[in-house]
Amino acid sequence: MPTHFEGDERTKLALDTFIKFTRAAGAFESRLLHRGQLGDLTLSQFGVLETLHHLGPLCPGQISAKLLKSSGNITLVLDNLEKQGLVQRVRDTEDRRKITLTLTPAGEAVITEVFPRQAAVIADEMSALTPAEQETLGRLCKKLGLGASESPDSIVNQPNPLSVS
Amino acid sequence: MPTHFEGDERTKLALDTFIKFTRAAGAFESRLLHRGQLGDLTLSQFGVLETLHHLGPLCPGQISAKLLKSSGNITLVLDNLEKQGLVQRVRDTEDRRKITLTLTPAGEAVITEVFPRQAAVIADEMSALTPAEQETLGRLCKKLGLGASESPDSIVNQPNPLSVS
DNA sequence: TTCAAATCTTTCGATATTGAAATAATAACA
DNA sequence: TGTTATTATTTCAATATCGAAAGATTTGAA
Image 1 (cartoon, rainbow over the protein chains, first blue to last red):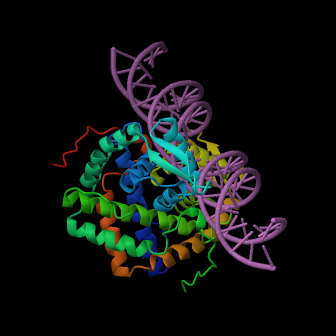
Image 2: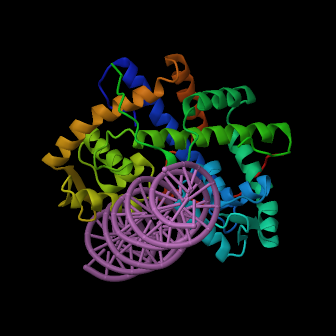
């Protein structure tokens, strides 16, 4: 949408950029989902398996922090992965509040199979940009996303600046 | 996540960029939600109201296409907006398959109140980037998102290129 | 005209997602 | 030690989201 907004130039540019940004993110994710390299996995499930695959056993809170999702959400995704026999929950004997998630052999097999394919799809989609452009995009995204490295659980309502003059 | 991936350089850069991109999008949306300018509206509901506000009465299919969401999803969001008395469904007399959505006076009032505030929040968040950077981000996002301007309903499973060498 | 194909919306089942409340266990401290 | 605060996970209710199938209606072609 070309915004259809009549306001000051700064706001107009921000809205225009925001829309392109949001749409590109949605479209990218959608195409990732429709290129059939995920097998029976959802994108969330892939994210969790990938995290455990590359970082080793973690507890739900850590996964939540890595993926920037709420703890409640992670619980559900883990439930579904456990139903499929891809991960295993083990109660920590030191601190019995904690639970450690491990990939089962089946889970390890799935992610070992799926990850390289998905990486290839991502690389292919990303190849719409030159390497230099990718670096730029990454840098701008990082700058834009700064300060937001907490999972939803921990986000508190900020005092309302709205100092946009 | 710094990816923890050991592959060829091109794939590594793509994954790294992808992660920054995805995270920034999620973080941005999350902060938009937590700056309290939306009242009782969800982001989806805001999107629908904003679309009707700026484009005038539309039918569900058009809203679906504008927002790149599935028709089933739009039906639900409209249901919730209708429950709140913010939009109204009217069956089209010409083509009785269609339904036209209109903002009620209450809906018009809400979006007129909320939109400028939300626009200010977006401008404020976006001000992490200079105008020039915003233009660049917009251009790169557009390039990255090209060809994906269809709503989920209409996306067909592409024959699997995976021609990533 | 009539029937098959196409179009538009809704319904349905499954998964995702949040935020708040509930549970359980540990840590801190008077 | 006993009570309170903190931390970790799960549960719950509400909304979002998809994709496929169902329903209703119109179009197009024989």
